[in-house]
Amino acid sequence: MDHNIQEELVKQVANQVRKLNNLQEKNIKHQVDQIYTQLESFFWLQRSLKLQGNLPPLRGWPVSPDFLLLLHRWITKHKPKVIVETGSGASTLVIADALRQNNQGKLFSFEHLEKYGNQTWQTLVDENLTGWVDLRVGELVDWQHDHLNPVDAEKKSRWYLRDFEGIQQIELLVVDGPPGGTCKYARYPAVPALHGRMSAGAEVWMDDANRQDEIDVCERWAELYGFDLEFIPLEKGLACLKRAKQEVSASTLPVAASVDTNTYSDYDEWHLGLDFSLPEDRQTS
Ligand SMILES: C[S@@+](CC[C@H](N)C(=O)[O-])C[C@H]1O[C@@H](n2cnc3c(N)ncnc32)[C@H](O)[C@@H]1O
Image 1 (tube, protein in one colour):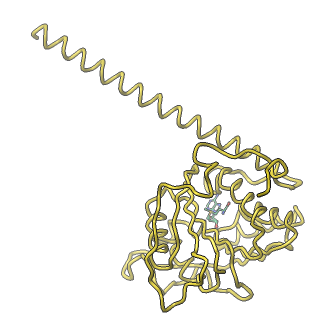
Image 2 (tube, helix red, strand yellow; image 1 turned 30 degrees about the vertical axis):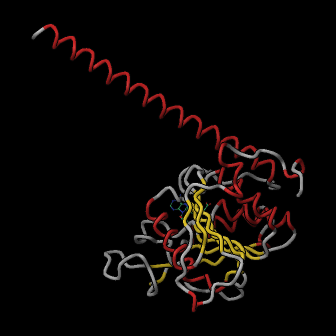
Image 3 (cartoon, rainbow, N blue to C red; image 1 turned 90 degrees about the vertical axis):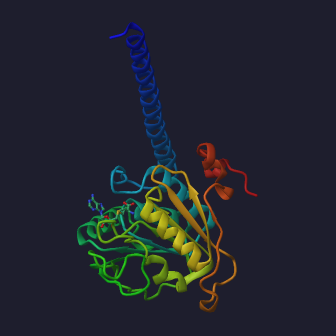
């Protein structure tokens, strides 16, 4: 082989190796930062919680510590009277703890699997938190209303049994179920099912908003139900939908909504890191 060509090839290979190394280094740094952020969030979460025992493991299926920390802070700050969540687990325990600290409010938690429902209930019993939670466990049933999943989809649309007795004026809806394997856009029914029971200033928090299905769902909710939509860069992604302060009446639906993926308005502390101050250290405005 010509000497010049050989030299050129060696140079190109060395270049590629350097680029790959840089990329790998960046990826590793990102992973390490992520682990550190979760540990830091977990540490501050532990200091905020008033639990006797420990939280369930927070890797894999459950929400991440950064989400739980933000959730606990939001609830102790805003003191909502009615919260609904779909998908029970660690989040149920954290929400119930925040309500107990507020000494007001109720969480209605929907769960489709008895095994996990029982598990969640037992943790609430152990922590003496059952009075703050109405856990509604029942198998998913066919969903025949508005959905992003096509009517002729291989996996038919299913959702929780619409047992909404006693649920009115929801101030926070936390959407973390049913699992994606149920059907495509499995979480979509949450807002169509519950928007009529939400308060004027209600917020909807969607976990796992790094995933395209969840992004599509949130964008459709924002468009149809008049929410402003923000994506908060947590580990698994949080989409936060806020209702404009005036009631959205059925006659005005669908309304145009702004979809902003780049502002962090109320969440500035989350833009560059975390706000690690304890509630007692924070100035009240
Ligand atoms: C994303 S998980 C909900 C997590 C819950 N919000 C939490 O903070 O732990 C959605 C559903 O998955 C199911 N689930 C929970 N843990 C699971 C596991 N380890 N394996 C399979 N399914 C699980 C439960 O039925 C739950 O409602």
